[in-house]
Length: 562
Ligand SMILES: *Cc1c(COP(=O)(O)O)cnc(C)c1O
Image 1 (cartoon, rainbow, N blue to C red):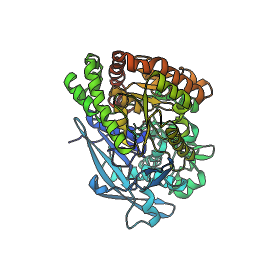
Image 2 (cartoon, rainbow, N blue to C red):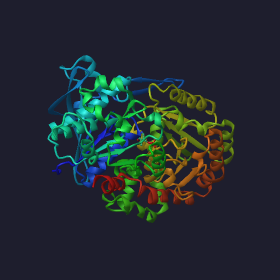
Image 3 (cartoon, rainbow, N blue to C red):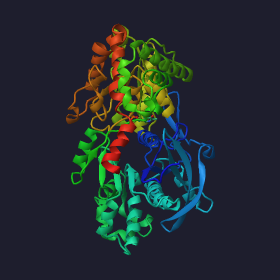
Image 4 (cartoon, rainbow, N blue to C red):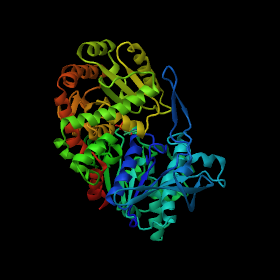
């Protein structure tokens, strides 16, 4: 039986399971790994999110690589249990009834309940019934309604469920920060006041924690003030403190969270610096992201760890002991993971990838700054490397946001180059990137590629999944990789450490990438195999043992939750 939760974790998306489409990418996967580790560590936590009845979307890629989207329909009752409690909120002048569904995450020592809010009830208008259908769908109006449901509805639901003794509210990104409005109202009510005053804000600031994930100003949710005043019931009670959640005369959810949190952090050291520059007036700390080791260890590596590092599942830092695992065992486990990946790729596409060819994996949201096409910049150079230095094959995956046309064109471009290179280099693009595919890819590739434009990658976590499976990263230095990269020990850097200072030239990075493939990585893989495997072993011991959500949550406990 879990103790009374004292941490309420709010996130627009949570990936509790690969086939439950209540996540779109890194933010939701991190939230899932966070609650899984909380359950392992026995941290008294309860989590709140939105249902996403139609998921993010199901991705279809036509012959040219053009993406189209369909609803991702799933049977909620097969996974979640409905809870009896209902609450209602007012949006504009409409009453919106909210129910919720419970999913229980069971860990090594405890359980964490995750509640998904849902407005699809007969008593709601048709318009309101659709508000919890799509993750990141719709326009600004739809989005603000969702955020009202998550933040304000979420607090009301917690109270209704009997969680009255919550001591910390953790906002995973600004989407949830309207919860502050409800906490302010509760505090004013407690003190017998009609309007929100500074003294109420001081109380609320003692209990809120904010983690920001976005290193660009445009990535922060903002709404016109008149939309806020129209949609948020009793918005007049905030009139004396409106300037604390307005920025440039717009409701800014990041700003609201910044001005009402006792502890604020970015998700890697570099990201903290960038965030500090953006929001100079606030004290920003950093806690580098992690991944839930047990979730992301492939079966072959789980078995290997069982053999050599007994008890690793309850003590992830013990993965440091991987340095004592014989090279042959590391290699055999990796080949077993690679076999699973290639079987999936060869089954799903018409490629005929082979086990003894070095395999480069790349899976990311298809969006401009992630530059998925960077590795493909020079076709002739790629052919030359492949035919003269050493064979390699490449596997891509990733969705573009439905409104991101440039992102969709990026996928098409990869398809085009895939055809151009077909005679020489095998390339596959797997549709519908999910947690399951992510696990196959990060554990089954031989090297894990990442080419973000610095400093836009707040942290990134897929390279951490690769690391604990003995797969070295080959990446531009940004986000977590600035902390994880030890050249020729845990992987390889593309470019230098201070590259964020210069304008980003993808062609230049591509040259650096090819050069390192040519002089270091391909020769090591084919002619100095033991030294390659030794690097694999160090990625586990040095990075796998550290970049996990167990270490991350322990830092949240000592810095933010205490
Ligand atoms: C791990 C993961 C991510 C986040 O990885 P990045 O390195 O931040 O791109 C995104 N989507 C899925 C499905 C994942 O498993």
